[in-house]
Length: 397
Ligand SMILES: *Cc1c(COP(=O)(O)O)cnc(C)c1O
Image 1 (cartoon, rainbow, N blue to C red):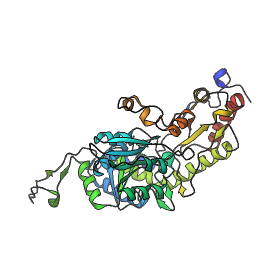
Image 2: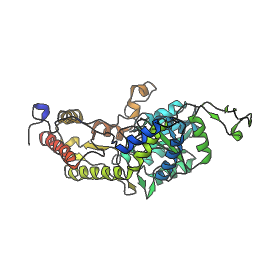
Image 3: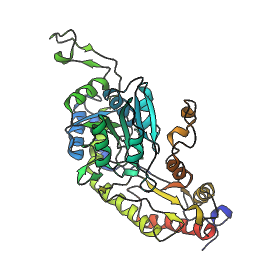
Image 4: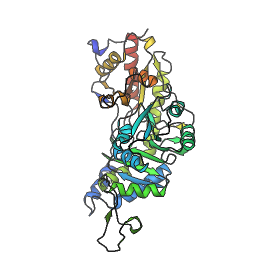
């Protein structure tokens, strides 16, 4: 094995590669250009077309497209009725937005530990945190793998909690054959460019509940309604619309909607390729005792958004920092997903302390993400595996 690049050897990759990137083809470009030549850049026909497509893909009855995944979580949290004095249980290993949406409503995020093998919210840890103040749960399908739907939904049903699923990683994933997006009270998606399909910026909430759907639609546009039944002062005057509650402008543009519709046509191909790449990494790494492969629950047919390289510190003479820096020196630009949310200084200031979720903290100390995206070839995957082997040959016990 060659010398590590970090010590002056030649890097495995000539050019830096990132952990994720979008795939845009001529159909996507044509779809956006067509909207730009049309009359409606926003509030036009592409939004409805996208929402119908999202219902098809997720099996949900209703979908509301919004400006980004964070906006989707915010509107879902309001619609769930979270407010001051409430507690809402949330996964500890997730992007901060999963918990921020609880703070936006004035409620208190309560962090649940992860399962040490799947990295998803541990249903037993979740149940232990329930108090009379608990109103709901925000659970993330981390890396794209479905949460344990049966266990989590049963707990929410038993205690009367609203379940918001943060499926920013999980479009296309199925649980016991049912698509993510059709199972929780509300499911939130993100269409940021690193995610499996993109709108540039974009998000959506799906639900099977008509009342929640109506509320989400209204909150997306300032809390203003044109529906007489929703008004305090109903009028059939054509100019009249009424703001009945405080909402936001979280609309998506028609350019974004058209791009996402075109991307969703490619979702089956994107999903297939992501599964192939994850399986190729898994095959190589499961033979290496210095590494730990993420456990897949058999119920989840996962479209993987992230591939996590997890170190076994007992069999390595280096920490995560040295391993991570060695990967970067090989031009493999890893990232870490994620710092436990409560360890951010913003949350520290609210009184959350280190030690709250031991599995999440142990996970954080030993993990990093490897490149995983549609355009990544088998050769590319093998070059990353080669780089990992090179680092382990040097640091491994
Ligand atoms: C990306 C992401 C979000 C936020 O989505 P944006 O579209 O960037 O606002 C929320 N939760 C998770 C788990 C994410 O990965």
